[in-house]
Amino acid sequence: MTDGMFSEVLKTFLVKYGKEWDGREKHKIVGKTPLEEAAIIVEDYGLPCAKHEFVNEVYSMFSDHLCKVKALPGANRLIKHLSCHGVPMALASNSHRATIESKISYQHGWNESFSVIVGSDEVRTGKPSPDIFLEAAKRLNMEPSSSLVIEDSVIGVVAGKAAGMEVVAVPSLPKQTHRYTAADEVINSLLDLRPEKWGLPPFQDWIEGTLPSEPWYIGGPVVKGLGRGSKVLGIPTANLSTEGYSDVLSEHPSGVYFGWAGLSTRGVYKMVMSIGWNPYFDNAEKTIEPWLLHEFDEDFYDEELHLVIVGYIRPEANFPSLETLIAKIHEDRKVAERALDLPLYSKYRDDPYLKITSSKGQ
Ligand code: ADP
Ligand code: RBF
Ligand code: MG
Image (tube, rainbow, N blue to C red; front, side, top):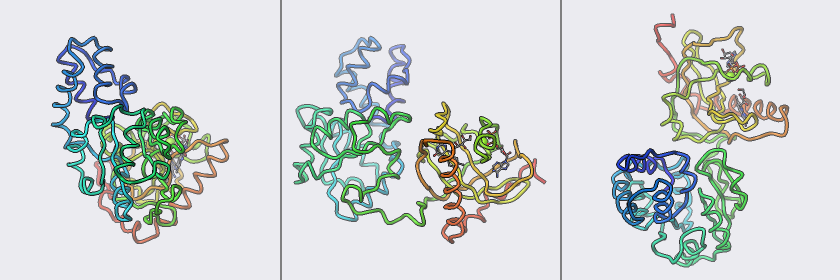
């Protein structure tokens, strides 16, 4: 139970004991079984309750929130794809079976897609022991060696490898790749999974190097960034504040996206952008950096900028040199420029959100 909703419940629970939830604890409990979680938190906070009391209370509070838990970006797409192709799937989690079942009951089509569910209360030992995965393979009638595990926790990666399976890690917390060296591959989000690498049918929804999405919208005044775009890269990016966008941003992984940009006094332009921590510079803060594909003769700080984001290109990456980073961004520009001429994407040029009628514009 690694999602934000669980953190919220813990926070409320700890307040009752006069304690304050320290988000840093998240690290220690990712991927653990409910009883292990309880042991860690009861001990760390010196709570005057037994482990099983903690589990009972916290999980009964949590069950009221399960309906609000959102699927990870790309999860629905992946599940639909694999189940359409008849790939047998199991859900194997350190949570208890009852929690898993009620959690997925709120996700459309998931219960029908997973032919097997294994919770940690159904085996002798939870992850990192391989038991859960071995039991899942057995119930699916599959060989462990021909099974692929998709995991968000280090503990789960260790369990999958111990079961003799191939493991793709999708870390749930940012900047954690280095902790997942046991995995066969570490990807940034489920959007980056290439099923064909693992002998599974490839996705067919990529179009000319882009993955279309339902359009999503962000906007605000152009703010000062770290002053690197034009100076260091020769690529100016009209940064937007991330404030107020935590919900939209959590629905979309960090990465390189494209779409249309509307500037209140100037017009609508093609746009390619990065959202994330810029691994090459290893920023402490997540930034939103749209590059408008047009030559302007002046800056436009504070001007109202609205973006309609229509597709995804790639995850953010690190690069061996500034030149290779710059070359990659120019490649992104070409991909976006071409794609935005396709009817699928060009139709959003007329989205009313781009025609800003602010008091500042004239
Ligand atoms: P900062 O770190 O402050 O974002 P940049 O070097 O990235 O500085 O420059 C970004 C600024 O350059 C934008 O805020 C905008 O005012 C201006 N600018 C000029 N041309 C463009 C363009 N094509 N795309 C984005 N911003 C541009
Ligand atoms: N920064 C990275 O560290 N890795 C990337 O893969 C990356 N991709 C980018 C793609 C585009 C289209 C743009 C506009 C920027 C990208 N950047 C990336 C961000 C770049 O480093 C950033 O704009 C500068 O740090 C200026 O603030
Ligand atoms: Mg910038």
